[in-house]
Image 1 (cartoon, rainbow, N blue to C red):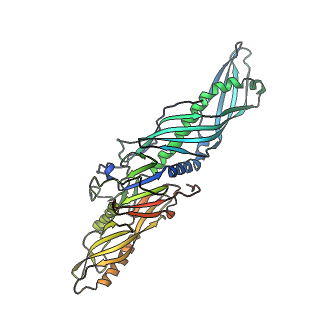
Image 2: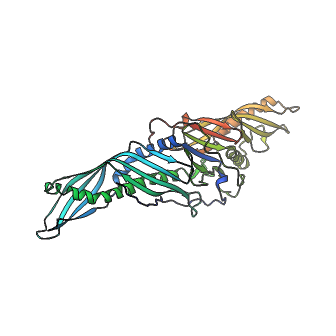
Image 3: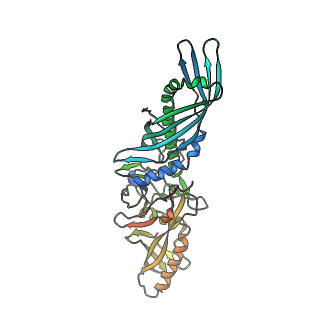
Length: 435
């Protein structure tokens, strides 16, 4: 059988962003992308590790009127709880449109409940007991789309357009009281139960799973403090709805860094050009444009002068440019009243010690080149700048959020010199990592 339901699920949220920037699709300097296999593995892990939540779902009572001709009775199921839920697999359809289809095949569900009946005519016989209901080999599906919240800029929700549920078998077992009397009525009871039970299961369970997705999206999109003084923040807002392409799905973030007391400082102007999201050769990637790193360099240079050392002054903020093998960092430095241009070679260094889902991309710097200048010990200055930049990098890395259940340490950086993007590309762990 098949039941169709229309449902819109929206998780509660707080509109905490009051930043003056109005961001659009072209303002994304950071994205997270998964191919079909990666998206399926990730969502299945999310469901598998959060199944404990469904066992506390409150299920409304179901009352079934049964007409036996000479008499009528009400058969009521109450105190219903999901006792067991097995979700062994997840599949998705990802095509170039706004919607995505999620399928949960071979689902097995067991419900425990209390039952009672009340005869409507004399002699008003009543009875009660317990029971269980099993749904075997169910296929649950949901068609979803995303939408940006115009009233809460930077927020996004996943909406369920349609849910369906089909199954091979529904069985009910009554125990206690004089339940043997009602075993002969099971066909009548089951016929009345089917629509109500399948309505509930497809509506509540799929809605609950998508609700978990909404919660994860909200956790992954917020302000993150970069320094302990709470003054430098990472503004990571969604700048577009979920991008659903042929075989991939992607989230787009702003990824800008600001001084908390001066949010009107816009080093990055609108329209930087979007990241190409379907460029990857593994299950998941996180891409960051060099503008995001230059933005960090700008903030820390302008407000903290972090890139100047004891014996030298950095005239302007370091400028990072991705190459095929890493990044070149260009600096104009003054020492002994002489200005020289320095280039450093940089490779990314990952830190994931801030929290479960937050890490930093910093750089390890090596000497690359320096202008020659009369009366200046170029080699000594270059070594001093490299040492200082590596010390600063420990504190001022580009902060990023990575998805739950992703072991970022196994991901490899791939540099795209044409798009000026660094991609962290890798396969998801074979086993689901815990929350």
